[in-house]
Structures are given as C-alpha cells and as structure tokens.
Image 1 (tube, helix red, strand yellow):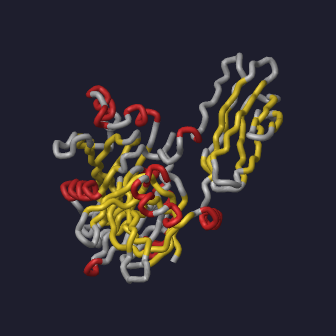
Image 2 (tube, one colour; image 1 turned 135 degrees about the vertical axis):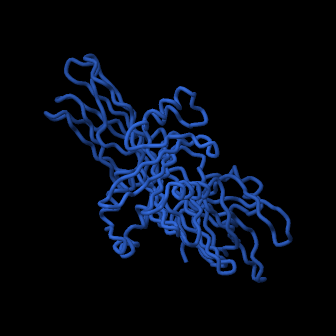
Image 3 (spheres, helix red, strand yellow; image 1 turned 45 degrees about the horizontal axis):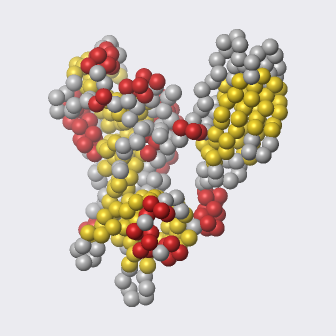
Length: 416
C-alpha cells in the first residue's frame, strides 16, 4: 500500500526580539521540521502560494505538483547556498515488515542495499556518522549541464524515508552537507507513518476466490470520510446476493453482470459507523466482511459541533482538570486565552495559553494547546480555542520560576 502523503503543515510564529521561529509538523508522514529564517519551504499544500516564485525559477505549479505526487514528496526545502532538499515517504508491504532499520538483521540490510546497487546510483555506502542511513549519489545530464544528486535513505516507522539533495553546480560534498543539515532539523514523531487511520477503519482484507466461498472485496475504500454520506462499492461475482447489516437496518442488493454493487450510507454524525457485509453467490458458501467508516468533521460542521458541545475550563474545574487529566481525556473544551509561550511535544508544536483573567490584569490557569492543523499564532495574541482534553499534563515555568504542570488540549480550531 502506498502511503498517502497528505502533508499537514503546522506553522508557529514566535517573535522574541524580532526573530522568526518556524516549526512544521507532518503527522501523516510521521515527521516534523524546524526551519531557519533563510530557508524556503514548499509542500503540496503551499504550491499555489508560491506560484510566482516557482515561475521565476522556470517551473509551474502544475508540473511541480505532479512531480510531488509521483515521488511521494512531503516537502522540499530551498537552502541559501542553492541546494534543494526534498523528503519523500513511501510505505509498502516490505517496509512495513522491516518496520525500522534499528531492528533489521544484517541479511535484511543487505537486501535493502542491493535494491539500489544499479545505475544510476553510485557510491553506495553506510555513513559511519549516520547510523541506520544508506547514502547514494547519481548524476544526470541536462543539455550541457550535469546535475548531481545525493540521497539518504532509511526505514523508520514502517516506511521508506528518502532525503534527496540537488543543486546546479554544487559538488557532492555540498549536497551531503545539505542533507545532513536538513536531517538535523527533522524529528520523527514516534508514530508510524499514516497511523492516524485507525486499524479498525482500515480497508478490510478481501476474501479470495477459492472456488468454495463467495469472493468479495471493497473498491477504492477509504475508512475515513468528511462527507455526510459515504458510498461503499463492492466487487464480487455476478448475481451475488448482498446484505449490508447496519446498526438499525438490513440493506439488500444484487451484484450486476460485472460483479459490482454499491451502497450509500449516512455518515452525518462524527462517529465510527460499523457494518457487516454478507455475500452469497450461487453455489458458493456465504462470506462476510466487517467494515468500519469513521466520520470526521471539518470546516463549518466541526465548528458547529464544538460550539454546541464544548465546555469551558471552569465547567470541569481547572484544579481537577490538572490533577486528573486522564479522567477527562477526550472531553471537548473551549476557552479564550492569551498565548504566552511555545514549545513542542512528541514533535508537534504547542502553545502555552493562559485561560483565566479574573480582572486583575494577571492571566492564570494555563493549558498547553497541541497543534495538529495549520494555524498561525503570535505571542500575546488573545484567541478562542476549541479542542479535546488529551488526558495528560506538560511542565511549564510559572512567573515565580517554579516548574508546574498544565493540562494538554489537542486543538481542533481557533477563532479570533
């Protein structure tokens, strides 16, 4: 299965002494990136914003977007010395089996090495300074110009991570240095790439045609939807009698002459919908598939849901929320507060937000807001946050210089 490389870029702005700090998180790819002020970062989601700049380089948004999709590119960084460094991530049955370079046997590492022991790759080596990474170089001719490439590859979190540097006129030593510079700015989030899709809403394994049971499979199934209705398309034998068992109904149908049939089910509420598909072809035994579809709210639907369900911090009680965070895990919460500081947790940017101002001019009762969606924050900004209690606390420095604990809240959206 090829990893979907939808990149969620999360941008934090902190402005101490006019310095610009940028932290980007890509949960679907399992990495985060801390950029410098003079770096230019492109992602599949920001290409339109950089259209004029790309055009000045002789490239179009459409061409770059197609290249990114083909290569599984999560992001590309332009460094001030002219080097371009991109990260691509791919997930296959083999990478999932290997899981991590740290757990691969010498034989498995040799198999991985041999996959790249062919043209155009050259100089394959395991750099001593970068344990767990395979390095290779190659050169392509573009007219009268030779363009060199350097790549670092590893298996992490069940996926292949490839960091590739190039730059017209740059020697390989400079490209190796560029790769290492960006690698040092990366952090693996600790979750498997693509893990946000829960196992119980993953595509169920098809039932093969063994001549005895009824074969059945789902077509282009995605276990997560953002729509009020979801189509479930089934591939089986022509004439197969089908029944989709829902929580309250039984939906019957018959596969057409091509073996296809579809059901459209309601997924209006944010929930995990579970179904059992029963299939029986003529002269075959019955087969069953367990199907789960998770509805996730976005945009206006998300805002409406949180505006009607989220409770203020005072409703739970700040002291209780801090002392018994696990007991409130998953509870929707809202507060209007002042952004005071920035940090990160598990590779995700987070902001310390004070939620109470009792009229004395002193803000109290801080929470850590963990950011997993694109949002722009500035220090001292006063904003309204909606989110879910994560179920733990994180340390912070109080104004008295003491280390104290504040509950963590996963941000769902922010209002001015």
